[in-house]
Length: 136
Image (cartoon, rainbow, N blue to C red; front, side, top):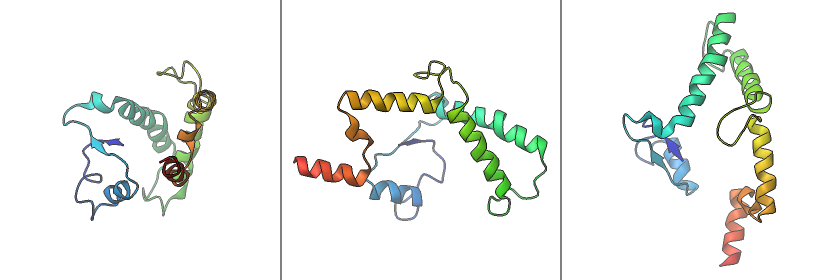
């Protein structure tokens, strides 16, 4: 997993939930280099799109008295609707999408992976561990 150098991701593995989870799940973790936004450009571009197309529009339409999701579930509902639109309805011109939605690209990739006998990549981590251990 690649993240920026935010404090929510860094620190002692015993005290930060993200680090602890990654260690427990044996997930390799690395951080982007300092002052190098191109390292994580895809995520940065997504955040910019979400800000421009979701947050800016949402907060222009409606005044929110609290940004806490627990106190204002309407914000989470708006975000969920936008993410569904972004992933399943909005065509993308980015790498690998070629004008399809991310959802359609994912479905196409799954079919290709199964054709190439790589479908074990889509198995849950518990099943994957069992599969790996049984092959040894």
